[in-house]
Image (cartoon, rainbow, N blue to C red; front, side, top):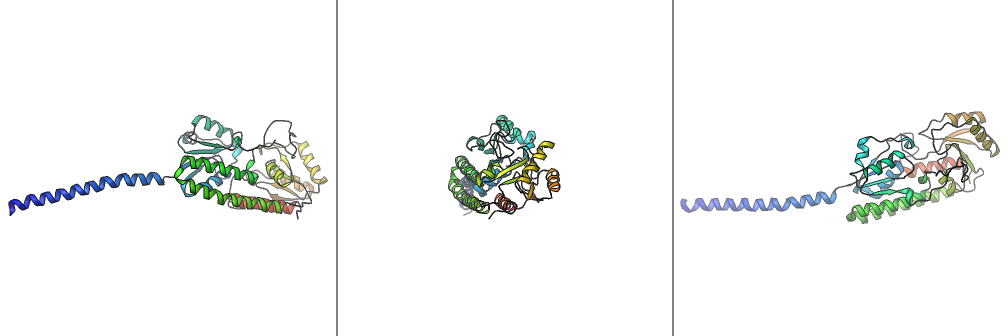
Length: 312
């Protein structure tokens, strides 16, 4: 019995080990496939409005890196070598050429796998301090496209398509997320149109001419103390011109923004005995922002303009 019992035990043990090894071998590829299927798409965005869109459209399927730190002025962005190098490894870069030279250069150098350049499909209006096309005497374009919610709808649709091409398995989720976001943006557009109808005062004066798209969409006229670049000091002649516009049009409020010094706006308001208030170009969200996201801050902008311009 011992002569036959021992080999039988050995054979039984060997067979069990063999089966166990087979089970381990077949499970490993399945786990690897699952990990690959659930890996998040890596997306780099130039600044906040694009981060908002990618977060909403991509949902849990994406991880977003904002190249512009919270509270930083995106016009003056400089990138580290590490940030530039990272663009060659991400799945998608969302930016607007012509707005941030550092990002344009980085995209050219890194050659990302895919890009969404909003300047390639949006219609850019001429840069102007006073809402008149060509008033600056240059061919410069106003880069602040995101301040018209209908442009944000178009950007969201392009981001949806790019994410779907990068990860077709999640295309349905991206489509559903985009549908919800578009509904929110369309509601915002209707709210702003209602808030800014029947205004007694058409012009609004703000620290820099970032609001051309908003003004055009809702029938107002922006008057920028500065042009589209926020860090250029206005001349004495420009300040005098702005003061005269304020007097002529019975302007009640001089607007400033959270990422730019309010000194000049406050000075003009003080000279004329006017109020000051915040009008946010949404180039970044900080603790001082009047809202936690694009929709909330744009709604706050509408409320501030409605009050200042005495809209019905």
